[in-house]
Image 1 (cartoon, rainbow, N blue to C red):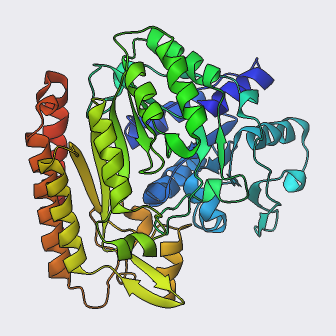
Image 2: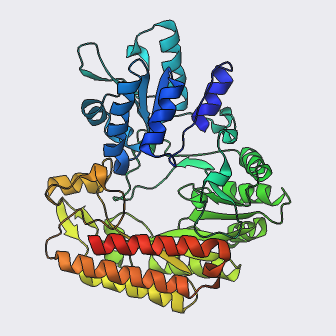
Image 3: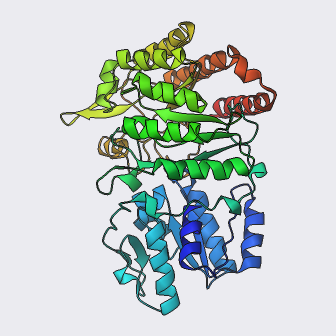
Length: 449
């Protein structure tokens, strides 16, 4: 939607078609063939790289003259692999707004691609050329509001846990100040600053746009709203002043810092659910994966949110690997089980309402990926470009059996389900179906694996 907005502003006569992921591959191909676009652009992350490769190759078969441009996390992390394995013409590395405009200008004017920063492309002799990096957009207020009018909100299932019956996600910032080993976030680590914010007035204007479209709940998916506390308070104050009593929010927070004035501003604006990355109850693991939080900080944040009536959703990730002075270290099954017991104890104390759990997966671009390659941790024949779910076993850790990982996976599902069953918001009519579908899907996947 950002890309569409900047193209509209720069080239108002252009026609833009957005095809969402709810189309089947066959439907998608039929639509593209009917449109016969000049440029076909596709954004994807590593779990969808194999599917994206097949789709791009099919597109080039039916629309051979279309310029196929790839962007997103995976093309940023592995542009050479994308161009070698697919018929894509160009990969955008990093942010795509300014880059895509220059690509369009190059196409219109017949100019070479060599002068465009932030791309990788195939030369005439089929060699892969990677150009210099593009500086970040320094001022996000220069961007137009996202082109939400290109979508039909009713086509989307929205947030699985919500109070508003029609929900949507948006971002209020870009990047993250931290460097957790498991995070594959190469788009924002190409250069500094790693974290940039949108003006609170712009965030509120986009929220108002979504409200007028019928959206009644918004998940602000910025990695952490409290990377800049004063800015976050200004954002939630601006949302409060919109004056919509039937509009709800959820967001992501880091466990520290979480000052009382921020939580009060969140609650006043209608924020009812907060997602926090807890990952592990082991101080050794938290230090090893560079999480830089402590259990007292976690519990303090959860307690303060509870005090203001904001429910909490904890992210947990099991079987981590990291290095300490060049030596590999691994999370033990004992530590994983302690973490699951910790999650249950937080629920019993009323500090945690929901949780999700996953197995650490070494996606390209992450430090975990480099560690896994260096120490030969990847499961043989593991295809990271086809792994779409966080429960797949992708690494083999010394001293940890596959049986132990499978058993922990079942236990994690049980604990997660127990938290859902204990919370009355899980029984709202418009969330019950989503919860059941998610549970059955996870159960089938876990049993099959």
